[in-house]
Image 1 (cartoon, rainbow, N blue to C red):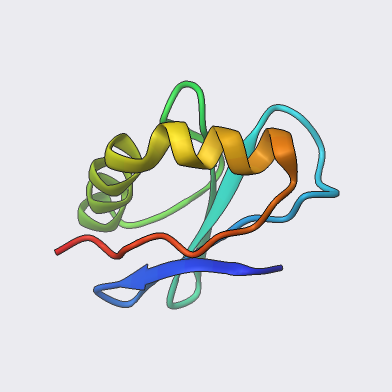
Image 2: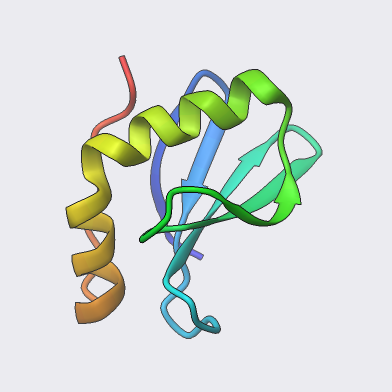
Length: 82
């Protein structure tokens, strides 16, 4: 699964052969969650509250790029949350 970015110990990954709806994975330590790209909410798994908020903050900035990546299946690295 290609790594899109990482910040504050959170790793964001996307897998193109994965099931709908369009989503990305966020891994933080032993926690793993799938986030809907369109709704920017957890659709499976869980993260600690603070990590979930950071992921949503980051995804809000790059939602268009994530959806384009999902639809085109062309991978690109994205900047981390600063």
